[in-house]
Length: 89
Image 1 (cartoon, one colour):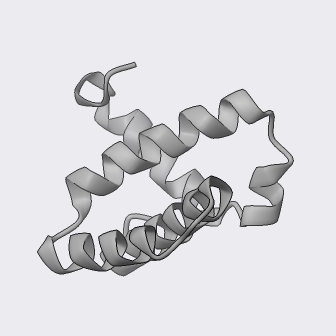
Image 2 (cartoon, rainbow, N blue to C red; image 1 turned 180 degrees about the vertical axis):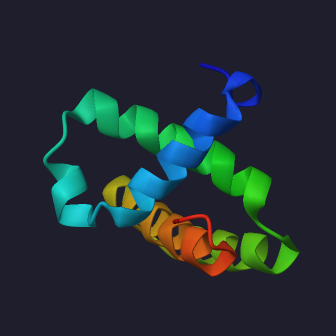
């Protein structure tokens, strides 16, 4: 599914749901589903973040060595952004 074609109500529900799922619970989901969600999170994050947030995320991403740690870092940054913007309601 292309990010631009996601209906606003589905994106709102996705954000609300993902703001509430802790990382350990997320890891219990099937790998394919987690990969799809991380991809959608990255696209949404790119759409939502400002320049300062982009630079902070880039610095954190570059300082992280393994792929699983990068996914967790993205996941946690995304949750913080949703809460900061009030998109977790």
